[in-house]
Length: 390
Image (cartoon, rainbow, N blue to C red):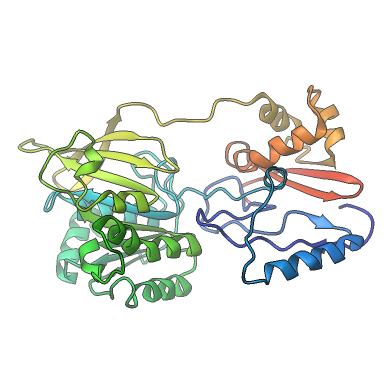
């Protein structure tokens, strides 16, 4: 801990459109069911209290615009969204589109079941937690038959199903929020289909704006709750140079969400084969090839066009990882001392900025929890190797 006067905590800025927030610690080094704890990052001395109070007063002004400098941006650690399905699905709003009657519902049930049970999906580790499937074009008897065919006598009490729900802007958001409140740790809500929850009421003057506007409440809700909302939708019959242009509606739908999955099943093949094209803000564009087990209707991963992208090795992060061990799992000190300990040619403030930017990667790739506190005496850095039981 930093010695000196009692510290006053700087309030966390309100969440922006991307849902990011400053952080100072993480839960652990594996994908778990619990969300990360989010805490303030920096402290200030008592003689800065007047300046802090002045800032709070400005923030309470209705005309206040929350703008920060580039330096402040680099001085802050932001929480990267923990993946729900590693490298494939993150918290946010997504579209899963495909032609009618081609098996989209089976894919969605499979996705939800794997997440609920903590089983990898097509080779990708998942972040386990409850899921809600709004099967608004189905009935419970059909869902019962499908799930029994897929998973036999292995039900899970973490997968919740409903066949009726309200529409966007007319109570659906409150229903989802209530479900998440009753079931902490919820990871995924699937809405099958968009047409069933879209009210058609919009103040927009054109179709693009109406499409974009209709998805806004669910995008905001997904960011607020830290969950993934997957909206099942249809594609048009017409082909297009860009396959994502076949999603029914305007580009307003595609542009309003965090990612799109495009499901296309082949015709006349036994066993059936399919592709899923993936694009999004947090995932690299990719095409996955799947083969269906006709007995269970489960889709089995075959291959991808290219490997899923990974960050290249970083010598500084590698050096930090080698600094810690199970025998010596913690390090704490000034940034200058860390430069000396790592034996690297880097200025202390540059190292602090680099670690701020890469805090999530330190946690994800090296299971290291990073904190940085600042006072008049300088920056104090703490590093801790996280165990699975931490």
